[in-house]
Amino acid sequence: MNRENRRALKKKLRDKGSRTLAAGVLESLGNEIDKKIHDGDLVALNVDQITARKDYPHMQEEYRQFVESSRDKVFVAHPHRERPDGFSALIELEGVETWLFWYGDLIQVENIQTEEGE
Image (cartoon, rainbow, N blue to C red; front, side, top):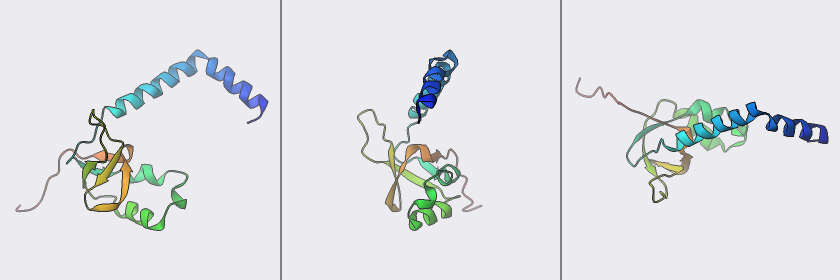
C-alpha cells in the first residue's frame, strides 16, 4: 500500500460513516458469538461459505472432497476444548476424526424429520 492509499484509508476511517459501519460489523460478530453450538447439537456444513474462500482450491484434496460430499449431511457436534462459559470456536463432528471445524462454518439444524416407520 503506497502513501496515497494509506492517506485515503485514514481519511475514510475518520469518516463517521465508517465508524458506524465498523460498529455494525463488530455488533454482528458479537451476536454470532452468542449462537453457541452445544454438545449434541445437530449441524450441517455451510458448504457454500467454505468453498467460496480464496484459499479453498489450495486446501487438501481429501478435505475438499469431504466438504463437497457433505452438502446435505447432518452431523452431531461436540465442542472442542470449551471455555468456562461454554463457548468453543472449534467443533468436532461425530464420525469425522480428521478435521475440526470453525463454528461459523456450521449451520445449526433445528428439526429433523425422519422417515423411518412412516
